[in-house]
Amino acid sequence: MRNHLSNGLQASLGRRITYLGDDRCVIAASCAKSTSLIFLFRSLRFPPLLYRIGYLTRRALIHVSSIFWFQLNTLEELGDNLRRGRMPFRWSMLISQMDRTGVGSVPLVMMVSFFLGLTMALLTGYQLEKFGTERLVPALIAVSFTRELGPLLTGIVLAARIGAAYTAELGTMQVSEEVEAIEAMGIGPLRFLVAPRLVAISLMMPCLSVISCIAAIIGSALISWLTLNIVPAAYFDATLASFLLHDIIVGLGKATFFGFLIGLIACYQGLTVTGGAEGVGRATTDSVVAAITTVIGFDTLFNVMVTKITG
Image (cartoon, rainbow, N blue to C red):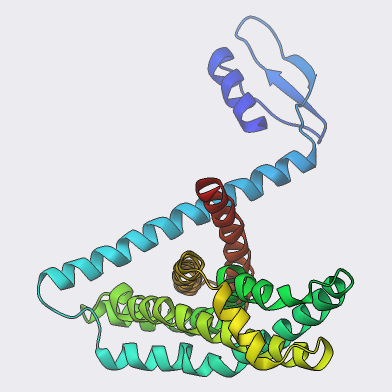
């Protein structure tokens, strides 16, 4: 703000401007016909909160636009190789990333979903039992995990486990100049490093979401049998009767989209690391926070849109 004022005054008066102090500035203007003339005015200031909000908003918009162009450049490299009849990456790289992303995450996703489904069935069952409607627990667990909690929970787990690993790997390669070496060999780093990870996590997310739903249903069936006297056969029959094709499609679509978002944010943070080892740690933390926040935000937005469309 001060530089803007000084430039304007200097251009209009043709005088040299000197600032003295923090809150006030003295303008020393020398004219050909007169001696020094001093103007004293109070500098313009905005509250620090506004500066902070503006800074964070600007930084967020820069990151969003950068990730958008990062996505377009990756798709452009993939399309260019496919048009030439060449695979953009080796199948072995894709299989390795799928094994690491999908198979390696199965135990954690199953454990978290099992205990969450068990807890939900226990708490909702006690409340519904007061009204004699504990038979609604199977349908409640099935619909909530198929449409909402399955993709969301899996996305949070993968953002913390796989997103952090992607960022740390690519960030280490960036600071050690391995990415530049790949470019020097004439290999596009986006299609060689980013594309296999994006495809792997996008394909594995729906599979892990299905596993999450199955584990949650098993956990809720177990606690319902022990506390609500609902036998497993009746529980599974009620669960199957509550499944709708619309809910399954919505859940799988959300899981695929969340996987793509997590991979995109993680790879972008990894390839834009600066500052050595400290920068890698900072980028990894930012990647996990940004991925989880983005997944929750898009999940909320998606639910509002679907609710408005389907009524």
